[in-house]
Length: 98
Image 1 (tube, rainbow, N blue to C red):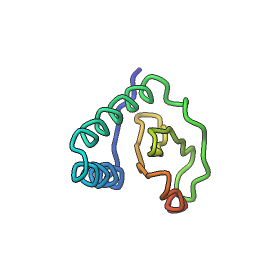
Image 2 (cartoon, rainbow, N blue to C red):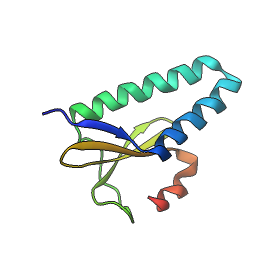
Image 3 (cartoon, rainbow, N blue to C red):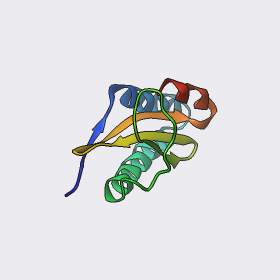
Image 4 (cartoon, helix red, strand yellow):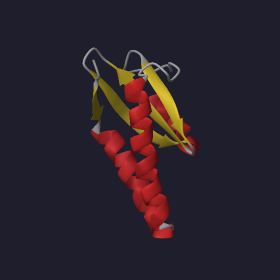
């Protein structure tokens, strides 16, 4: 059974903010970011446990997948895959809020 994908509001904001930033400098890069995200979501959907587990204060079984230079944090539940955050690798310290 294929799991549904849920993108948390914080992750949506992360992606939108990154795309806005890129669009100011290179509109094609912003489009590419969304395409990369869609591709990564397809990979995660096909293999939910592909990403290594990471420590999280709020969530059990948080995992990560890379989309250079971004890191996508997600967790797998019984019914869905929740994309929690999408952080630039330079903002890795924000992972502590997960």
